[in-house]
Length: 471
Image (cartoon, rainbow, N blue to C red; front, side, top):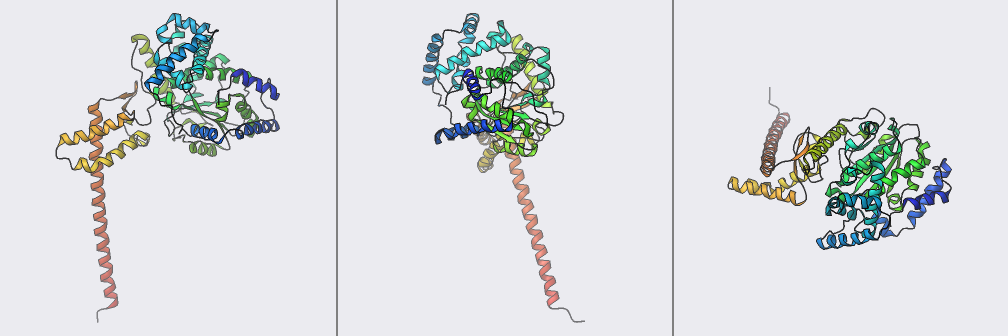
């Protein structure tokens, strides 16, 4: 199922009679939904299974061998040369060939297109075309976009939290991007909205781990007033998504007001085929919608903005994220080549700190499970060197699954600690588990002793009742 082009999507809308607008009535929405259901029914069982796996985050990744990468990069270069209209791409190539031709940059597009070299080349050309339209042809064309590249009004909208990356990944380690469309109170032009989406998608695409896993998007319509979203606005926003090197594995449309049904149907109908098949719609009250999202592996802690869609947003996390991004971008601009900061931990990262969020992180749970498995051998070790070796073994197992040991810094985000600190963390867990087990054993013995005492007392009392003493 190839990604449908924007032009093809618009043509399909025109043929359906929605050239300048979305479906306006429930009857029209039902017609659109019937077309979507018919399209889905025509897919093979294998295609439907693949879609279901993608939505739930259990899809198989392309086995990325060195031979595949080398051959694909070569084929991609040939496909780029075949494309005639590519003025923005050629301009960027002349300005900074190292940036445009870098292995890491082009690999993002190959991974996005599952190593389809022709599609990856087309997306690269579209990427630079869209980037030039949004940010100009200056040095920004051959570097990552920064917060400082956004105008004051667009930055104000961004700070309001209407578009943000949620603080928790889903259970499969994918970042979740959420757009609260009915919260969009501050006025911004179409290009401002496009720039916001471009920047947000760029941030998720910089992590190699996420290039393999893909992202999840949530569009939440809260309240009882339908948002006045035009077809042209959606078309322009959709163009940005098509130019970015990221895989949208699932898109969730959430709405509480039944009057928004035609709008949601129109949004689903417009996007390309691959994205359209991966859309899921959730209608009902907030509690029902959150439950439905969780069935797709989206974690929603108490401090999540998804729990406050009807009130003021809890912006603590979003403000921290912006602060860390700003500090990192300033550092990169001044020093160059600075190591990217970690804002959103990976699935198997081990986090230092306290609280439910740290304890419930997948990486911490997994590391503690490894400690429990190796506890008998650790307790039976004859000296500290042997114990240190066991801790090193667990650290290696975590590193082999791309896990890191991270400690939070208020100004710089998550920082990776050295191996010695990581080893101390594992050793600390071993000692804690041993004490916890000893406390449980002591508690069991005390309880057992108390139960025996109670049982003996009851037996003695029964004897006295059965054989009362004579007066």
